[in-house]
Length: 196
Image (tube, rainbow, N blue to C red; front, side):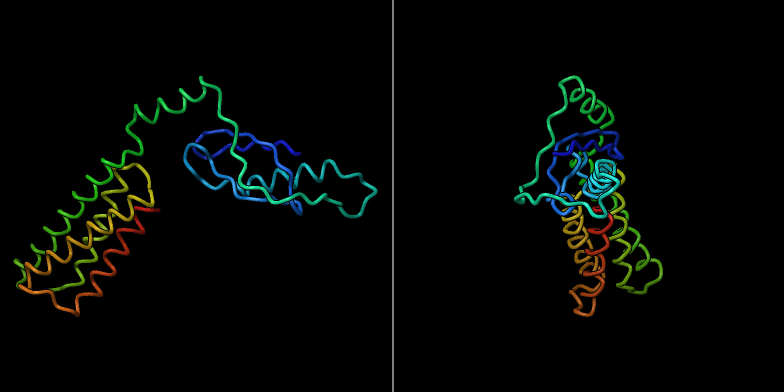
């Protein structure tokens, strides 16, 4: 077994023991706080440890094969460390899904106003402005959530879908099938921006 210690970019440090398979992690590992993949960092630690442990006279490492295990959960941090890790997130309001959804709605409303306002001002219907609704929806969600999340991306995509279709109905009185491209791109942009 090799002890592995990973320092995540979010500041969380986590440790676990692993039996490498072919000099690599048998499964993926992720930070218990922010969920960032730590498999590459763990593989580097394994490579460094195996290089140090290998006798200089051997040309190749001989590794024992071990059965593939499911992801080994890192041991829970001590209660004091857990409280310290949770307290800043709550105090700063980070990663609040409700705020992310609110940001998506605000971004969508700004996009609707801009798209419909352009139509009223110029008297010209430009359905690809719906992409702007998707971009503003995604950025609004990302800014108020203070990060990205797959669930937030899906919700932002749905909000962008409803917003663009509603705006096109206001402008055209019906939904023009040619505008489906604008809807798809808008939903895609909102999802990509809000989900990371």
